[in-house]
Image 1 (cartoon, helix red, strand yellow):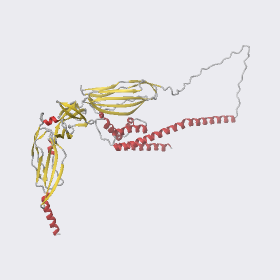
Image 2: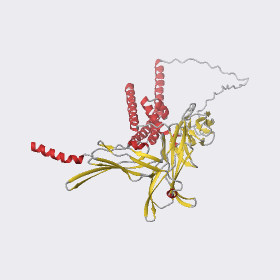
Image 3: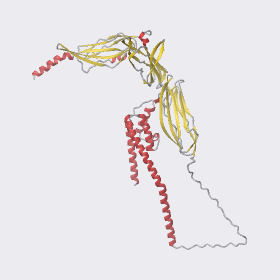
Length: 548
C-alpha cells in the first residue's frame, strides 16, 4: 500500500510541471493595420490547459471580433515533455486611432498589453481604387417601424479569387436581405469595374439617433502570379428615427403614399338573390413591409352574408423605395330582395412626407337586389267576386214552390260519418309528414355528413401544418374549418369561445399581420380546437339523451 502511494506521488510530481502554466503571451500578425482590415490575435499559454479560455470581451467595445479557435500541442524531447495551448481570433477596427489591447489572463497568469495603431484609408490609396464599397439609405429620416432601402455596391477592379462581405449593422433596428445579389459592370473615372449590388430592408424599432454601420469586405485578388489580400469598408450612415405621434389611432402605418382600390365582379349595381358578388381590395403602400399591411374589415350588412377569401401580400424594391401590396377578396351573398347601402371603408395611415394623419377611403356603395326570376313565386289568391245569377222568367210562367224538410238520421249514421272524417284526417296527416319531413331529413343528413367529412379533413390538415409551424397556412385552414364545422365566420365563432382560445387566435393574427410579433404555439392552438370539438359532441349527446 505504501509502495503504491509512493509511485502515484512520484508520477504526480513529474507531471505537475507539464500541467502548470509558466507563461502567457499575446501577439498580432499586423501592426499597424488599416481601418476595416482583419488581423489575427493569438494568445498562447506554455503548459497544459483544460477547460479554460481567456476572457476577450473587453476588446469587443472598440473592435469587431470573430469566433475563437483553440489548438494545443505536446512535445517530448530527450524525455522532457512540454505542452502549449493557443487561441486565435479575427479582429477588425471600424475607426482609426491608437488602441491598446488589454492583458489577458489564464489560470492566474497574465499577458502583456499590446499597443495597436489603426490607420485610416487614404482616398488616393491604390488598393482603394482597385476595390471599394459604397452605401446608400433612402430615406435617411424615418419613423419607428418605417422601412428604408439600404443599397450596398462592391466595386471590383481586379481578378477576384476569394471574397466575403459582412452585413450592415444597426442598434435597435432589424436588417433583412431583399432578394438575390445583382452583378453588372460600370465605368468609374475611365476604369471598368465589376459591381456586386446587395439590397437590405432596414426597420428601426426605437426612436432616437442611430448609425447604420457599413459592411466590411475582405478577400484576395490576383496580382500577376501572386495572391494579395484586399479589404474595404462601407461608409456609416446616421439615421434620425422619430417616434409615433401621440394623436395617432389605429394600426401604425407610416408611409409616403397609400392607395386603396376595389374591384367588383360582376360590375352591375343590380344583382339577383343568391348570386355571389366578389369584392376585391388592393392596398398599395410605400415604405412599409408586407407584414405591416393591415387587414381590411368589412362592416356587416343585414341581408348579406360576407365570406373572406384568400389574402395575398407581396413586396418589392423599385427606384430606391420599398413597395408593398396586399390583395384581399371577399364573397358577398345577397339573401333577400331590396336596396342596400354598403358603408364606406376608411383606413388611417401616417404620411411621412407632410407628417400628417390621412385616410385611404372607399365611398359607400348602393346595391339593388332583385328576386330570381327563375324561382317559382308564391301565388297570390285573389278573392272571387260574388256573382249572382239571375234568370228572368217569363211573366206568364209560375215559379214552383220548393219545400225543405229535415231528414231524420239515426245514431248509426252519425257514427259512420264521424269515423269517415277521422280516417280522412289521419290519412292526410300521414301523407303530409311523408312528403315534407322525409326528403328534408335525408337531404339535411347528407349535407351534414358531407360538411362533417370536410371539416374532419380540415382538422387533420391543421394538425399537420401545426407540427410544421406554418402560421399563415394554419390560419387559412382554421377559417375554412370553422365555417364548415360551425357554419359561421371565424370572427363570430371566436367571440363565443373561452379566453384562452381568443388570446391564441389574436396572437396568430398579430404574428401574421401586425408589427408587434408574438410567438404562437400552433400545436397548443390545435389542441384547444380538438377540445372544443369533443365538448361539442358531448353536449349534443347529452341533449339527445335528455330528449329520449
